[in-house]
Image 1 (cartoon, rainbow, N blue to C red):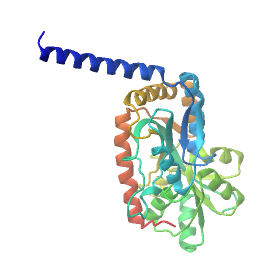
Image 2: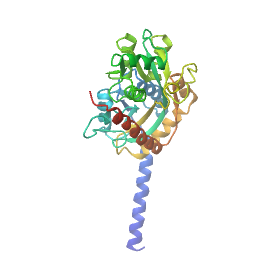
Image 3: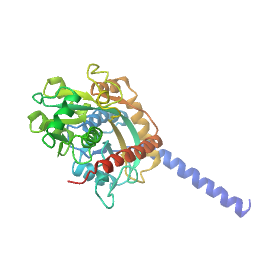
Image 4: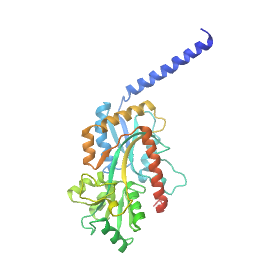
Length: 323
């Protein structure tokens, strides 16, 4: 055997060895608990869906999947903690439709497209227009007419600047020309609590967040924001039935710090797909007003690009600035 053949043989053995080590690494992972950072406080839709998911993932991975709520600055605090975490497969991040990091900044500090590796899409959930039971609005038409008569006098709660409820409402304002005052909180849960207390009048929330309060009568569900009526609330109209072209649904997904080993991402994606494919998980999500959507990690990454572009257009058209 000549030197060239010997060199190629050694290179082949090294490549094969690295491949085997990578496979072994993925098979051994996880050897300790896995942390999933949620950049929102407890009580919001991402927290609710994340905790349901974590129970089943823990059983499959045979290691505890721990939810770590790191709220602040419209999710930016948690995003920055997550993207700076070691890419060793023991820290992931789960978030939902939220684009506060794109608002009024000369340089975006962190974003879902460039600062993370996409791992797994979980599903979509309906948005929901809910009001305090004493608020004199029973239809979308009622809200539009009242807001036009009382511009700047109606207050809406949100999960924070750039969060899903904020973007929902700004899209509604763009399409109807009404003027309502934004009151941001640190998450969807605290925002819903403020509407329940009657301090703010309404919220364009995720249905997952407010469904228990609707069922208890503490909030009134006026309309949903998806392209068709929610099957759990067939008598509740969509916003689009009154405001043509309005559509807003929340997505939930899992991300990893950049440079996380691809084999670990592939394993986490596969285990997540197994969980969300189970009828039990799908029933739980359906009861919360959500629906499973399965796609590859690459497809999820492409969705993030289109979603970020969509809401950036809303931010610019509405002239949304940091508050």
